[in-house]
Length: 123
Image (spheres, rainbow, N blue to C red):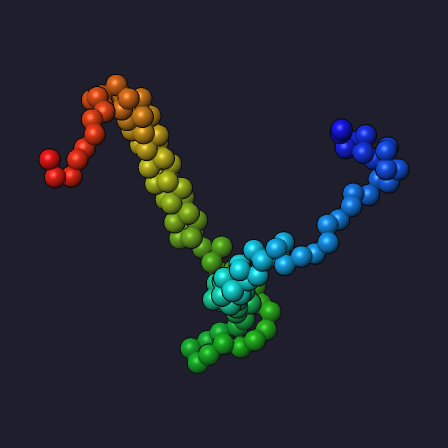
């Protein structure tokens, strides 16, 4: 019986929900400590860094406020764009070398491997 047949037989277009049980919630309860730890030690510092990146600063400290001068300085610098370009260039070179070597290794590895022998530890 298909879903369309069930809808026409029962006359209701809403699917029935199973009642909430401990068995359905157990996996979420087991993952909750990890989610809390990741949220506290990973997501919270990243959020804090994002907020602080818009603050003003000098040699003595940070001053809360919303300024975009930090991003204007970084993104307006030719050094930043040259660094990004060099990074992309090296990534493309490594990707090409890996693709070339990986293809030939994957192509020839089935033909060059010897017959399968069982290897015993102490023979």
